[in-house]
Amino acid sequence: MTEGQAIAAVALGYALQWVKSFKKVPTWAAQLLTVALMVGVYGAFIAGPQTGHIREWLVGVVGWGLSALGVASVAGAAGAAPKTDSIH
View 1 (tube, rainbow, N blue to C red):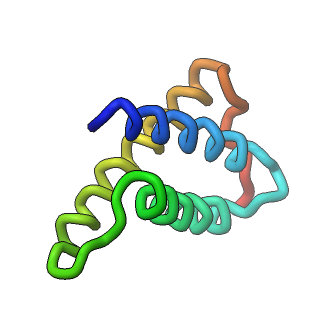
View 2 (spheres, rainbow, N blue to C red):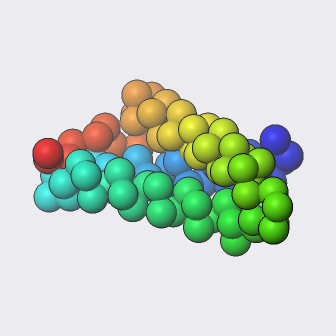
């Protein structure tokens, strides 16, 4: 992961933790937004999909996305962002 990718993962993860903290946001909606933002941010700012290499691109999205989710979890646990408080 490059420095730019790491910075993007930290920024997105932190923002996602704030979204997941709102009590009136259903969990399914927060998760759907999370997936959409991960694919969108990765595709727009890190690497777009290339013909014939979709599988590799998806692996990159998943790996990078999991790092963003890890940042969200750590931010909530450390008190740097509010803890998750969404509804089912």
